[in-house]
Amino acid sequence: MQASMAGWGSGLLGVLIFSGSLPATRVALGGFSPLFLTSARAVVAAFLGMAVLLLLRQARPQRSDLTSLLIVALGVVVGFPLLTALALQHVTAAHSIVFIGLLPLATALFGLLRGMERPRPLFWVFSCTGSAAVAAYALSQGADLSFKGDLLMLAAVIVCGFGYAEGGVLSRRLGGWQVISWALALSLPVMGTLALITWPDSWTGIDTAAWAGLGYVSVFSMLVGFIFWYRGLAIGGIASVGQLQLLQPFFGLMLAGLLLHEPVSSTMILVTTLVVGCVAGAKRFA
Image (cartoon, one colour):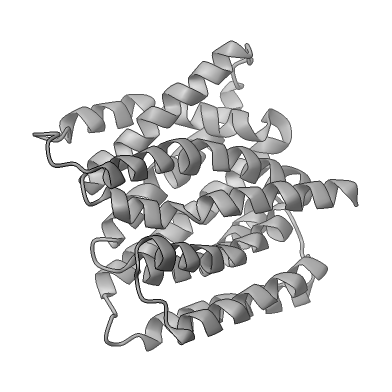
């Protein structure tokens, strides 16, 4: 019981941190290209993660861990940041955040495949209900619908769910912050090269808000949030703690409205409230 509560507490901190990712990404895109933003955030986080690994003298992962670390890197270091940055060129942060409601289902499905977890049938009822509410909302927004943007967000959710589940399994043995740090280190050669290739022609005209957005996604979204998130998945269960992501749209919508002054409709709030209500049911039967 204590492990379960500790897992949920750690996971909730991770979700709170991740909730600022899409608004911060949209702000950062005002000064940086999607490719540079994706690579730069990974490079900054990689150097921070490697510094901690060296400082605490962590042992290198085993060769058998490299495949899992590569999946984590492709899913959460490269795939999700790049796909969401591209999507945010076509949709608002408030609209894209609602897609995050699909992440718990994706994470639970990959947890079933990779983590060998077996939630009870009613768990899937609550998880699918929340996801269906999100999908119905997205399809109902005919005026603001961007097929390309929504497709990119859907792809981001799939690769992220895979990376979350794989990292959650590996964190049981290596530790949460070690997993994301090693995954970042593994991706550094590629992301460092990409950062140099997409280096801005000029740094003039990039405002403070864009730099702040880059700083947030580099330090908090790419590293600190994963320390809490992977720890929560490891000790509380991938499927169970993964349902906390249903809360992320609620926090994200508030941030998008408060910081970016984007419109948050009553429908958004209604759908998000319904989705949040599924967390309790999913937790009970996970």
